[in-house]
Amino acid sequence: MPRSIELEEAHEILSKIVCPLLPESIPLADALGRITAHDLYAVCDLPPVPQASVDGFAVVGSARAQRYQVVERPVDCNNWDLVLHSGQTAYVVTGGVLPQGTQMVIPREQVKVTGGEIVFSGEFVSGSNIKRCGEDFRHGELLVSKGTCLSAGLIGLLAAFGYMEIPVFRCPKVLVLSIGTQIVPYNRIPKTDETRDSNGLLLASLVKRERGRVIAVEVVGKQNTGELLPHLIKLFEQSDLVITTGGTFATTNGEARVLLEKMGAKQLFSEVQLKPGGHVGAAVWNSKPVVLLSGNPAACLVGFELFAVPVLRSLQGLSPVLNRIRARCLNPYSKKRGVRCFLRGHARCSEKGWTIDFLPGQKPSMMRSFLGCNALIDIPPNHPPLREGDEVSIILLDPNAGGLAGYLT
Image 1: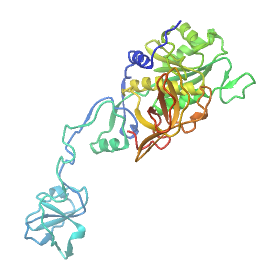
Image 2 (image 1 turned 90 degrees about the horizontal axis):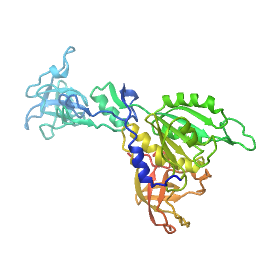
Image 3 (image 1 turned 180 degrees about the horizontal axis):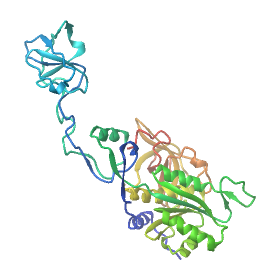
Image 4 (image 1 turned 120 degrees about the horizontal axis):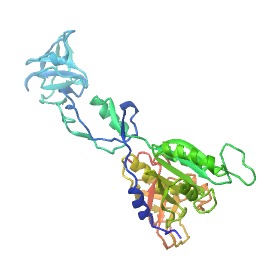
């Protein structure tokens, strides 16, 4: 009989068979959300030369000067070629290069322009409104560490240094298999004894959320094994990760483990001490990880978050550790279970901290808890019933769901 293991042991087993994919170079314009494969450094000072931080007049003068002679820039001369002397000024724009010798930039609204002069009655403060060379970043300074998810802000920063191509980890190619003789594709009308495959598209969507590339979503069950195996082997060869759903408990010929054994895969574990989806497993085929999830919809969702997400993140050079926080319960949960449970919840963040709602429809076969689900609530084994206000450990899921965007990085 297979040994039932703890979740943490399952994670440790998976970590030993997964390593980051080879890097690739992509255009900076396409790099949003991708994971850097190398450290990226400042290739120059930023700003590279002194610049104006406001629209106004660059001046050379003293505390006593009130009038400055405006120097017109020749058409074939940029500001850096222009040299200002005492008592002279030139108009500059925000971010513009300053003429040589500039001691201060006076904002446009603080001067009076009269003919070829400006009049300034304020205090002369040397260095005011000037961005010094290297004030923001110094040449050689680390900008982005390896294993960083590139945000819009980081894209803009790298553009400021002229980065054209960015080394990133390749996005994992993922095969999704729904296993079961009673399963039919979701776009077919099922017979009385058949069920539409909702898990296939569920998993494909979750894979895309984690930056994976789905190569195929297929239903496996009624095909002839002799014809099926060559087809599956071809798909496995194209994949970096295979995720199956269904057939993790039954022992029929279409069952997931039997199918993988026929393909020559090595089983790593087949049962984990948790609900829903304790009959989850993992295998390795030609050094490629295979994650076997329950066919019950809620168990499939929970299994993906707990087992497939760490694998997908590791393949992309990210930490596989799940994003956990503490939250206060907004409603009670009265059931006491002897095994560790991961319940579906809706998390919110406010000025008072994080809170969590237990969602209705917590049976493994039910999908009602998908509505508003953006967190999993980790309930230890034999934990007493939870009351409103109790604090629990939760795993945050999609940051774009349930108002989490902006709170997570």
